Length: 157
Image (cartoon, rainbow, N blue to C red; front, side):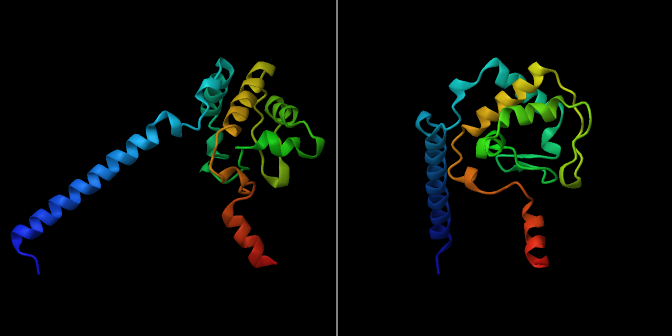
């Protein structure tokens, strides 16, 4: 059993070591070598696309880099996914954003934003910039369907 004085020094020593580890990891995480965002590729179009993303509350239905709602598909790599097998992902996304009528795949209705060509192109630029961020393997996870729905689908089969 530790005496009162030993317990005090044990606590203070442990706190100091933990604090130093925290500071070291913070400095390491914020160092330029760890930056995976490609901030140098941010253009005025990307910034405007991000503003439109937030203004239209896209994250209220979609997820981006694992954050957001699970009502609609994950959009981190939507351009790449829709370009697979010879498709044109940019045109696909722009077409949906510029549509004057609601789009309802698999019974889930998406709002008809009726965006202009420029606004839709800016949102696509934002989504393309997001897809270039190094996500340490997250981009390979299939997030097109909610994890809860996947469990239900497994249980029903």
